[in-house]
Length: 292
Image (cartoon, rainbow, N blue to C red; front, side, top):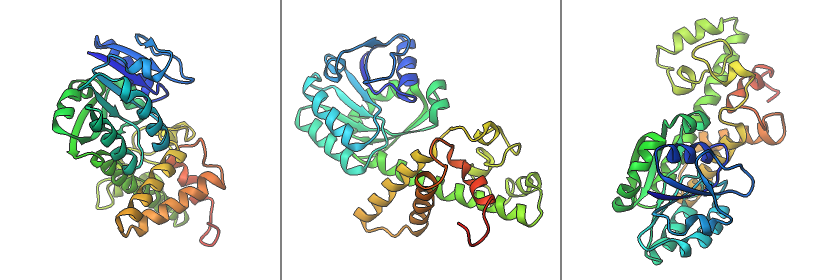
């Protein structure tokens, strides 16, 4: 399959490399990132999209997605599918889908879970919104780049699933870090805490698979000086998207709002930028009840 790939950074680069390694003809474009092995460089986004059966984008935000879509959709062949794997606001995903449909092309919003490691290993999970026909066109590529792709519904549903999932993740990570910080102050050994909680009702992905305490549980960014991983500023971005969506849908998300506020303070007023989102643990452990 002929594929255009726009956005070849930490996530997009390995994804494009895996597609090329599987035998697909991949033409890529990025303003700064190097071309992955096996990917042919294009001079512009439109050039990368020209003649492609599928165009994949991995971009920082909805504003940039809209700008790129306006450039590439006219260059795409009739019936080609624009598959955006960025995490952006639901409104931008739906606007791009409408623009593609008006031009006789398909569109999917397909944000991912699994991080840089999953992108390199080809084990991402895709949450996909769009038509069944467009989903079936891109499904073989999802199978190369990831281990699972869930068709969540119409355009915007993939972004909705990602936003809701990461709101849960942000809230549960803070709760997990709070519990370890409290355990410390109560004199409870962190390993004993993990042994109990990981097999009890406090079980969660944040505790069991991505434990924020160094030396406890499976290896995680906590064991590497809290180098991301999943950076705290990316968690803040996703939490802010969740609150934007909550405002738009008139949904009450008090825990999501509080998590957004805490990560905002951590990233923008403290030392969280460039650290893993699980570095909320040393932040909380260093504070007393009235200091946060």
